[in-house]
Length: 422
Image 1 (cartoon, rainbow, N blue to C red):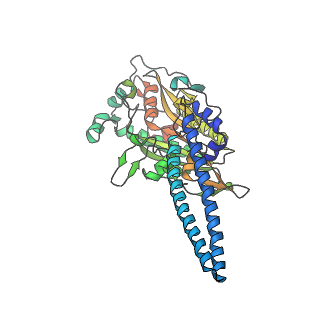
Image 2: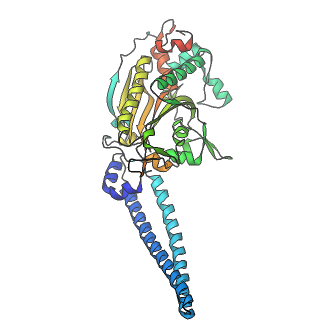
């Protein structure tokens, strides 16, 4: 969440940055400022009362020593009054603090200065494009027909076992999944990332820590008996490894990578745009996460973008990179790049990665800090990126590499697959 210090000292700037999302949160920001001022005023009164109480306690002791019992009793009455007032002030502060915290949880991150105003994906900016459109057979098929023809994915069986959006990968389809996961992990290790295998269920505190709660509560699968949530991305457990941690400055940046299944309830509406692997409730993803020094985070964001760019080039997929406008960014993001692969048979772009800098938004919730050169605790910046999400990558590979007599596969995957063609 946004820091109170930033809202307090950069009120108008925060309001203007939030306006890039196409929303007016000025009233909410002003309410936060007022609640903060009221809390601070009551804190001052409380401190004054406590100081007076300490002074009176000393006076009472001195009066008793001097045999001035009546004066001591009068002071004791004053001491009791101050204690009662202090209890009232503490209760009022707790109530204000609860309102303040709840209000802060409702405010999304403020977009960075490079993010443009916009209300939807139509306002996103294409910043890079690579690759040629594939030359396909005249009877080129979309991936949902190819997966059926070559027995790679069984959507009906998944629907029988669980429900729509939970496919079963079979035969060479399952091996392609495994090959992509291992390829993405190995490439991340070469880039200096440290591999972790985190839990795929997280507690409520972890959901709040990275901003999924309360914003996306209805979009997460919730195991209500144990109050645990299925992760929508490995970002959640990996970033929460550093919740309530104070790091050393020389430890930064910390680079982690992890493969997990991911679960999202909002699989979308009906139609070709969500057909097959285009949008699922369960899918596999390799995620890269960095904990960074605030002065280096945007340089690191560009490095992460280059890493994902390298993966797409090695897969030989036509793709483009978009800088998202304010209205299309995630709740916790300050700056996001989306990667979209070209789907030859569907003749459309498919999102395959989001790479984001959250600045201090998550770190403030997580209380993840580092001790700077002055010995003071300072919030880190957190970043993550899909490197990569598998379903639409698989869809793009199957569609773009199809020929009249089968599906050729990217050369970089051959060592992982044990076969070159389906």
